Image (cartoon, rainbow, N blue to C red; front, side, top):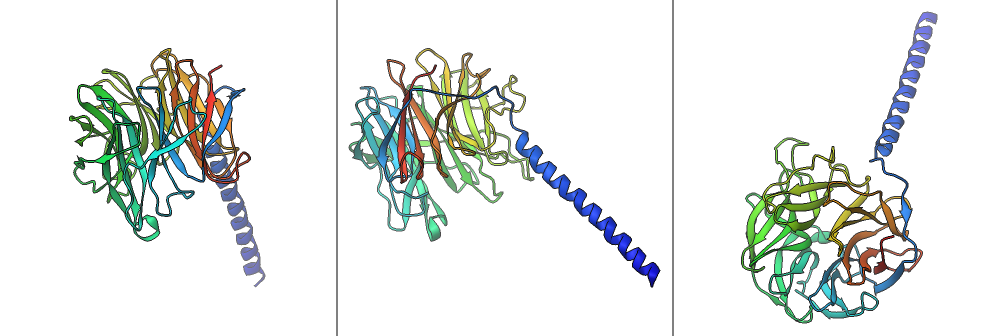
Amino acid sequence: MNNLTKDYNELIAILTIISVVLTICVFSTVSQSLAQQPVFKETKVIENIENIIAVDNVCAWPNLTLMPDGTITAIIFNKPSHGLEEGDAVCYASRDGGKTWKYMGTPVHHEPGTNRMNLAAGLSNDGSLVALVSGWGGEGFREFILPPAICRSKDNGKTWITNGSVKHPEGEADLIPFGDIIRLGGKVLAAFVYGYNERQSKPAYLLYSYDDGYTWGDAVPSGKFGEGPGNYNDFNEIAPLRLRSDRWLAAVRTARNSDLQLLVSEDEGKTWQIPEELADGAISKRQEHPAHLLELNDGHILLTYGIRWGVHGIGARVSNDGGKTWNAPIVVIYYGGGDGGYPSSVQLEDGTIITAYYCSANKNHPRYHMGIVRWKLP
């Protein structure tokens, strides 16, 4: 009996040691995971910004477009909820450089029990404002995805027509548009979408329109596909920028790493690769997404993105060589709050950058809102 007791005690001691070792390993793995962020230089915070509560009581997810006459439009979700109630994507406009905003119109009205909250938007080649607007419906407003409505306005978002169609990629029943619509010249446009399928992935595609935004199709995948876990395209919200016909950039939100990857295309978006200058494509830390890309007046590239950890805010990086290398990150604004980000930016003739974002209640405002930051690069 004594021997059994001794053996039992020794077994308990061994199991205790194993348990401690495993616990240390787990914490070590978690710590390493948090520490394995891209190594950037010290982050600077922009000074002398102008932060404006532009539209109150909206969750927004703004998409800005600089119109030919200098008006800035913002298409936003008009409810103070993360898409969990009925609502619409509506258009606001500013004629004073983002200082004040006025409701203009609604591209497409939701049906009962649904919302219209997801969109891609931008200028067509004839100068119209075009928006692809989808959303959700059913139980909890997450049961099914609405087909994208093709919306068009010729008066800066005041009145809209809905006319057009989207040809889905094979095997993709549901598509969610996101980001800026890109002009390629003539009557050709392009826009990114992502979807859900039986692989439980969120594959992203670039869609083309050859009639200036009325019909869409000819889908091109933005990454490789496979049937096994880890082989599928896990990109979703993609911010595109066309510099010229042989130089496109795309800042991609990833599902697995929750960071931003950079893709480039040299053939008008038909194929995409991670640039050789970036070993793994990462241009942000984890939980810094999604992004927006803008070519500035001087030809430099501005990347803005949501900082969704720590104090929360909007970060930015600049490339002086067409996206091959990127300067150290800067912080445009720290606003706090638990739900926010999704920046979209335009630049005025005097160099002022207008960056829109959304945020829940924070140190600056007690409700959901669309914020506007007017700022200049140092």
